Image (cartoon, rainbow, N blue to C red; front, side, top):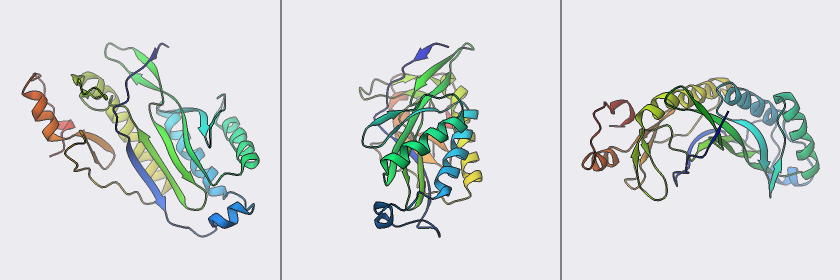
Length: 224
């Protein structure tokens, strides 16, 4: 499968799965003194990665602590074994991020492999906390990057948005913990997070339509 390189949008859109200081979790001070990482951390990660792998959104190949540590992927059980060995040796308080590659479905029936299509961020060992994040805009009908040279990509969004949405819903159901996902109302942010879907800010859409109005229905991607 060919590799693709969709640009980062300049915005990290994140879904939070969090439970404050659950029973059985050590304090930061206890972790610093050598307390073990709770088994729940590894159980949660394995469940979440099983979902992201099945939806072909994230197959993990590295973790980031103080620096990036590559973990070649052969299977999820083997990845978890290697992860536990690294954490036992390094004894960090958290994992900054877990990344790898995911599949982007392309118009015309093709697909491409994208580095860090989504990532898992800020996995804490003293709270039950992990975040699922994306810096890509393949989920919405306008290509967004740091140059702000937006281009329409409705077929791409229609192929991929539902995959992310379904995976996030499954993660929520599997973890059975709260998530804090307030609607984004910042007019400078072109994205709006609503539940488990990325939308475009209506002001962004209207501005772009003034220049190039596509003959398509964008209502499913606009947050009213």
